[in-house]
Image (cartoon, rainbow over all chains, first blue to last red; front, side, top):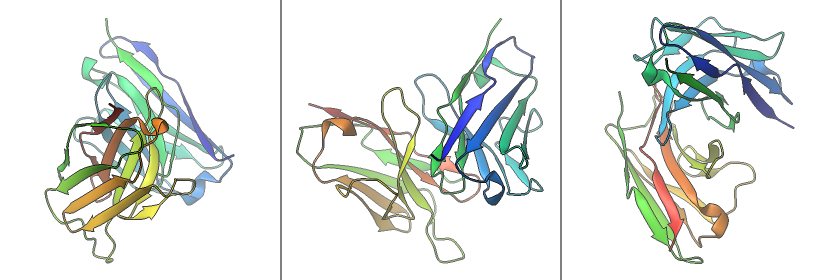
Length: 115
Length: 111
């Protein structure tokens, strides 16, 4: 079965860091661009970041630029999102999604930034 | 950035009746390669989003044929021919011109 499974979410204080992981199974990650999308409680979807298939090119939303870093380990079939200098407004469910078609989504991992 | 505007934001429908959601982009979504990268996603309560339609009108694998997409340029529509109980949720349009942006979402509920 083709699926994505996120992990690494949790409660963190403002200014803290977290690293999210997105493990792919049922397909080879290396063939796809990958994205992170977030959804604040009760709100809509917001694109966060994207990485190309070999990791040589990345893009970020202005709201996270300079604080978040997307990366991937194709050998481990895993996508990552390193989140530093976290703010209350980063509180959201974070989803990874496959390709520019966003055809496969993970179930999401909750990140709560609060003191 | 391209702004995606959906109407209505809420759509109460009777089971078995049709539903329609409109999505307008702030600029043309026609890519230089000739394709239009407009997709529709469904998010059922408590679930992650799911791809329904890509490139305006192509149903993704496993999507029932009661879902259809149409449109061109800046105006797009998602139609559900006969709403079923499992269709309750929030529907998002999204465009895949960088940076990727989503509509605000339209909540479909049963009357």
